[in-house]
Length: 456
Image (cartoon, rainbow, N blue to C red; front, side, top):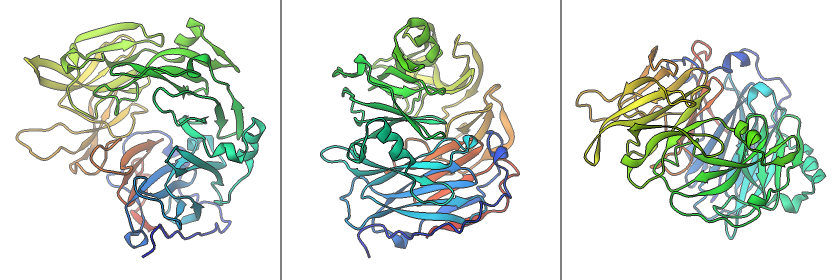
């Protein structure tokens, strides 16, 4: 048995991806097929230790990569696989990348129809993180020179690229930094890369990120991120609160914004970067973690003292346009929570639009008026509940969209399972990464007959 992963390359045959499936039908999130239509699996006999999978939707199919555990010593013969699988289950191509740790795929949303994918290979984590970034054609899997040339145009040669890390990704852009974003660390270079046009822009480093930062409980450190339009936001990220690991909207005051080619600290412009975001007040006691809305300048716009943190892990706030959903404690007795509810509220005003009983956790991100959540526990049921799809504008269950098996979908991040078990939404597709396989759930009546692929 080899010590590393045995990867098999397979060149593309030049044929276009099958056109049986309509990409536009996969762009909106809504009712799902009752079961996954596509299951992609790596064979157990190909590896000598656990692997972690990553998957993302690309035009015509799904891009899947496998890695050895980043916690284990590297093996000199590791060649890490990246495989493009078409919607019909055929393998488009398989590429093997020299690396010894982990692969992270960075791909723009399919509706932008990018020609290439960026694949970030973690090559070392001691004494510091080092990455190798490879650009692959989504059509053929062949390495492309465009990314390296674009980065060279802003002053990065091959030696510089190994120290780059990914700070954030949006539908179209990726934010690259030469610091692994260690809490409280400093930054020397920040580059925004357009994944569609293949253009790199050195945005410079604002003064706020060029000095060491104090980090402590219920405080924040500054971190760069991207807006949907590609502006670079520098905001304070709150840490060491009960729900920060699951809460995507834990960003505090915006202190600088890169917009139209320059850094600005003009309050009106900063306020436009991020709307009012709901969150829990930072405190040691869940009873004091009241729900409130905070604007981009860090000002509390509204507070609901009747709603507090439920005291459970893996809960947070998730935005779908003008609706925010999350689990809250709506009635406390003494030191405990007597009633937990799942609510939909207006993030701008805090107005409660609807409530559902019970502690719910969210799988993937809500979008297009829908959210996939764990079902309510009923009666004396001891096992975890299953899952339901809700209309996040009304809180009502979508007819025919319930699943009894609590293991169908996974939380992100998973606290119990090492590796990268997760459920992600990619447009209208739901990708469930678990163990050595990826299940692809298609929008209702679009996935076709179930098919299984054992990757080479």
